[in-house]
Image 1 (tube, rainbow, N blue to C red):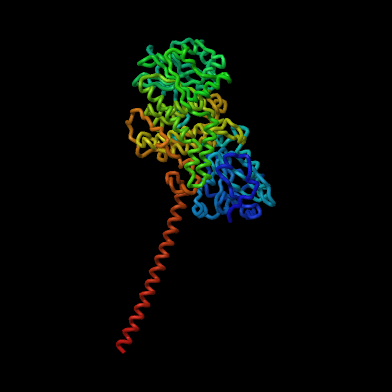
Image 2: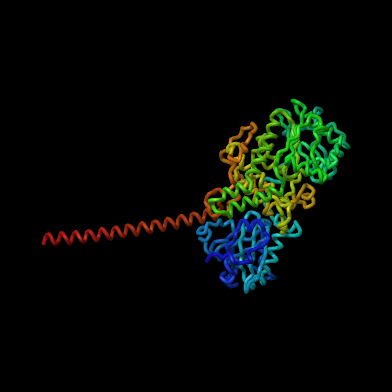
Length: 624
């Protein structure tokens, strides 16, 4: 039984799901009734995580799973068991061969609640129909009997779990994990800066630490920031007030070989009148003087030229180099969050819902690889300046999206420490978590509003850039691409506290370090899964990836993982169930071949016996 496109209930306002999946659903009258409630189960075939609990209960009644039917676009209807926990929905097919026969990964039916972007219900006859779409491109329709819905309160429990109004109701606040390493302590700013040679206790140190734990200088910056040593505090505060969201220039990295420094901030508030700030000009003059060669500061504005100047109408703008001594201003032409979101949607449409013979054209039209290329090109330009001993300042508009992408990519290219597993964790903690990338908003945690234009896959785009670099330098990275894949999943899943909140203040208010688990605790407890066997330590020279689109590839392991075409292409992503199923299937196929061979040999033996009998008969006639 396969789908029919005439079911109007699949039409909705979800642009991603509609574009990716032109679903071919089964008409409601043809969907088989879910099995009756006597098949409610009190056992399950999946293991609960620490702190995970089954939510299918009402009063004293409880069940580990309830029967359901599942409809996927253009696939046979699946009969299975529906489990709902405080972390995820798990659907287990009754036919263990269904996933293999239809080339659907078993993980497709393991859906973290916070990964859901849409959950809707319709009621038809005796059933409740749940339409679920996710932020990583999954879609399914689950059909459950009304009696079970009433008995176990399925939809309200599912919806409140996917979109909890209180962040403390998310699974991360129930999850416990006892690892040998506390991931919350993986990054220590003083230690990281000390490794870079920043030691304010030395009399010749040009920098100093400022205590920003109260948000005195910037509410979205970390507790400790590094600024020029000889500037008065009032100058620093005035400079901060001249920058969008008070995100003043602060040090993120030093080139110990050539003396150049890397800084980040937000756009200046020059406005339509092209206002100037003497304190800001003096501040940037000190940054230029940190270059060991010519006292020049390269300002890299991540935005396109036109977009940057258009911000003047909103109170933002760009630096007027006529007022800033010894500065050069470069525009990197990297598009904003809205363009990246639309590009990502277009790419997912192209990969998942286009005629296979035309999918490359669709991906090209989306512009995704072009955006990745521009990011890598911008990073390479900054790397070149730093290698030439020139200090660099990076900003976009508010300094928490494109700025985070560029700062972390530059450090990965310049500093081999950040190509180690621990260093990679530290650069994410530093330039994304502590410097206030808005994970909560960009990842749309617990946000059912699909029209919210603040959501955007900025962190995924960064991971894609790192993916491209690891392919070009396969022995330079201690970690493998599975780590990048899993970080993309865990950023959305709500299992760990690392990617919650929009800034350090939010995380302190939620007390995440005490009440949730860091993703790095899990990663370092499973190093065998994430270690690159081809890694060669000691390759400390800076690397400059090729950013030409011709060199870039589509990250199919992530963006095409639910397509049947890629079911067996990434064995490193296979879980125990996949391997078990593959082995069982292989054994079954082997048995079939063996039986066929036995039947063939049996036939050959029968033919031989018949020929022998015929020869004996002929011989007997000759003797007679």
